[in-house]
Image 1 (cartoon, protein in one colour):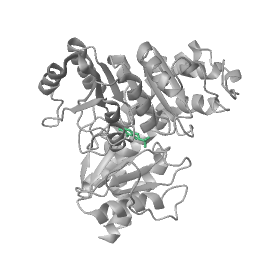
Image 2 (cartoon, helix red, strand yellow):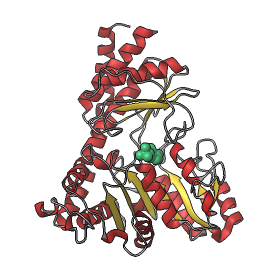
Image 3 (cartoon, helix red, strand yellow):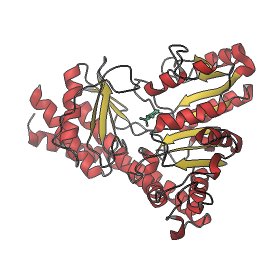
Image 4 (spheres, helix red, strand yellow):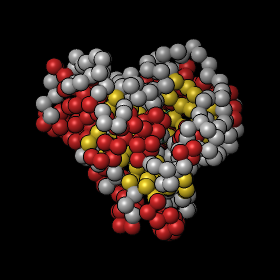
Length: 415
Ligand SMILES: *Cc1c(COP(=O)(O)O)cnc(C)c1O
């Protein structure tokens, strides 16, 4: 296939995608409307952007941002902090906030994201301070025929009874070849669990924010957790994480964030408020750019003969596109192609490496303005069969499209 044919394929893709792009614009419009409504209701103003130092008492910007996140996400309460270094730490704060010795954490969406395995202590108590070390038990329900296995959830809830304190749901597929959950499906899980148990339903919301016009708390989740260098940071936030949910759940998490008693009352914002407000305002639009890029990639790579998920015309509740290469070199070349078309570090050649917190070697393409930001166009995947590339992000559809075409070209010439 030559370049001309690739360009023709791109035109064909955009024709097929036009009605889908229209739907994405509608979601972004509705989410932007909700954001503007709550920025207005909470009287967001320029005076909130300067921030505090030291203890950070009476930081009106921080408090307003917490309120805006809670309102937009349909939660009673929330905290957003640039000092939370990544999504894993936000999840750790949430889980340690809720779970006590003797409790059971029940994951109902297969094994959680790779980096959480050590936090949970899946290989048993080893003295590192995982949940297992503190006597928190872990149990899991896998998908059955790619569907949520409600019968097994019921059995596990009966088996562990009141000891189940957290029912854990991961919205996005993460690094597994499994489906992403829609908001409706998350709502079903919440109803099912709440009818049978007092457990908190905690949702790992990473990569899901603003993909639909509602969030998990709108359909009953007790706690949602995410990273600001993904969707809700809108490509502007330079670090951070958030937790939103019921008043009590967020209060308990805030005691792990800082200390019991101080909770959300402290935490200097050091001039970061403006970025966080601006990023959250932009987030629905940026998520739409990323999703357009993902749809485009799906179309192109399916036509080039690869197994893709989701398909170009399938609905998405996260920004991740997977492309199965079946052989390690395919995955590696693809990531190198994405890197080469990035605005930053385009001359760098990414290689597989043993990344902390991950069980297999991982290759990552990330030519991002913010280190590791995956709302910016990035591609990665663990070096294990079936050698699946996970593509996500794209601050602008135009740059995303250019990178996908560059990557396809690189792959084709190497074949
Ligand atoms: C990104 C992500 C996390 C957290 O990863 P960090 O690299 O620590 O931000 C957790 N769960 C899912 C599903 C994710 O996509």
